[in-house]
Image (tube, rainbow, N blue to C red; front, side, top):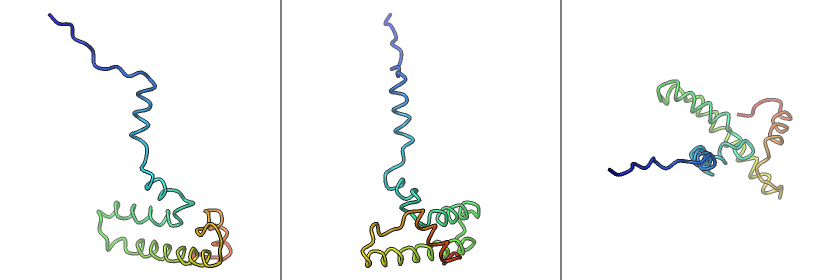
Length: 109
């Protein structure tokens, strides 16, 4: 009778490395989830959460979509203005955006 060999055993390092690979987000997703890159992250999350809560009924979430769209328009105009003025980076960091919104006194979108 042949001896049955056990399945390949993982050492702790290999198992951790394979788990790490499965938990890593793609680069594009990581960039979109970065608050320094995406100024409308909270609006995006709110619209996604609304869709999930309302069984993906777009009409129920139209106010969230509009707020996200206005957010993107506002920060895009800020980015264009900074680029024209030669300010680097064109998109303000999260801290700079907070200061801009405080100076305005209210949410412009």
